[in-house]
Amino acid sequence: MDTATIFDDTKNRMVKSIEAIQRELNTIRTGRASPAIIEHLVIDYYGTPTPLTQIAGISALDPRTLIIQPWDKSTIQSIEKSILTSDLGLNPVVDSNTITIPIPTLTEDRRKDLVRLLKSKAENGKIAIRNIRRDCLEKLKSLEKEKSLSKDELSRSQKNLQTLTDEYIAAIDKLASSKENELMQI
Image (tube, rainbow, N blue to C red):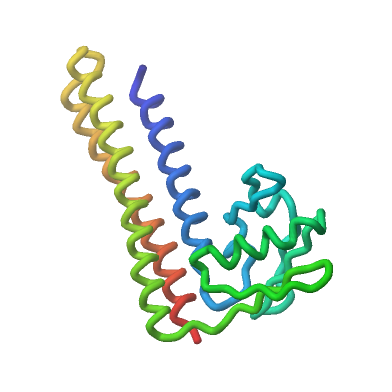
């Protein structure tokens, strides 16, 4: 294994971490209707836990309303139950063929709670990036011990690794800041 391979692997893992944190942040509701708020819900579909996106179409009717259109009408009750038992604080309205979810406006206290949750998720993303950096650093040091890498090359690689890490941590900060601004808008 050489430094280029190690850096490619590290970069790929960091990109995947950024994508994961972005998905996590999308699940935090902002007072605006977005299908991402409920996409992660798991529905009991004939005894099998199934993601909501696999059994229904989800769309935003307007900035304050989500519409769920199940492909199998017998799943409406299961979907409603899953939404009610989730920690989202949403109250679905069941029609004959669809479920309408009005998105209530967020109170100031709820916004502050969501900002705290957002910062916690962002910090977890930064920890993941730092763990990837640590793994890469261990690989580089083992190459140096095997005499495949000189001390100068190790030092240069460490600086490049830190630059890469700073870049991805800044990307997480940018995502979190953008989501926080979205949350605090009334």
